[in-house]
Image (tube, rainbow, N blue to C red; front, top):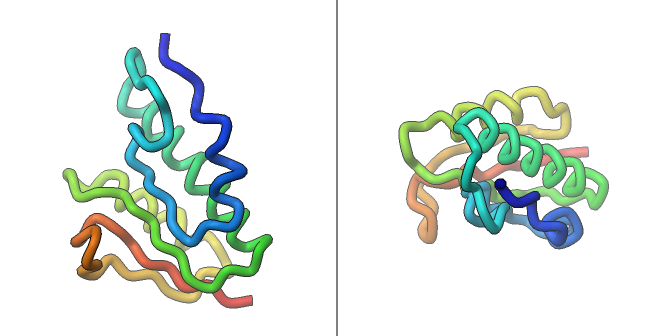
Length: 108
């Protein structure tokens, strides 16, 4: 059976400016999970991360989603469009992550 997401994730990300949505960064063991289940875990982690960032009034975030075929990046961008505090986001070249990360700016 697949393991549950790491318990520390929610508390660790509370004050962080960056989240890595690679499933290996979110779970110890993804065995037995389908792609849709993995995507749900990733998007749930993103939602918790953004909500925590808003509570702590952070103004800049980095969301590492990887490159792949772009499914996670597209889902991340669709989600960000629904968050009123997000003023802008961009998937531009970012030194450590290349095009595998999206930068987000928040305003209150």
